[in-house]
Image (cartoon, rainbow, N blue to C red; front, side, top):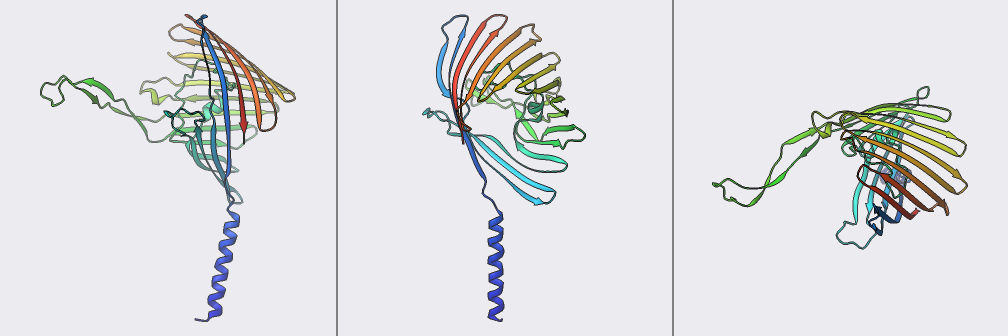
Length: 327
């Protein structure tokens, strides 16, 4: 074969490979270091205090254009143990997903915060302290496919379904079978495997400074007879003030009402949070939370938070100061 033809073919291949490599951008590396000192006191018992990791993470994300109408994206994020506690693993998976987005919206598969959480469960915007008394929905995050549509005259549809997930409730018990080789020993008793097919559906509407959303979570992961959770949320922004409210209800479990006011002034942010939970057991809890946060730079901020829990049988006061560095 003509050596000139071979040389030309090799050169063309090298140029093509170089161009392909040039188009493949490296993933973005990001993360944060979070530390917080917290103190909790229940009914004046003196409480407990300590400095601890507050959710430090490191992650990688990337996006690549498929064509003029479609972009692929991926993300993987790990929780980081930034203490010297050798009993805790250094890295644990938090999020990992891949997806595509375009004029239709976006769809992605893997482990991520659920769409219900992002659109409805908006009551807790604090850094270190929890200012609500928990969730009344299954809150699955792994093995799911999620979809958020593009805006259609201000409307967006969001949905999520948990795929092929199952749970097995294994227990330990003493073997009372006298014919068994393990008679009298503590043995593992395999439980029945239940398929969990939880799903979430919702609709959001945005106009000017107002966003409204309504959604539901099927709670299938809690059993075949689980009651669904229904929720509504509203967010209104006015200059430096943002107001957020949400109501969630799950029959025979609990009702949760939350309201937040977030005010920003220069490098400072202030939050007043109110939450009330009515349990089916008639045990109500009211929580008042306050936060003051100061941005030292675009990469670093400090904050102080306090929360007062008024429960049926106890009163708790929590306090926290913390620092977060982003990179």
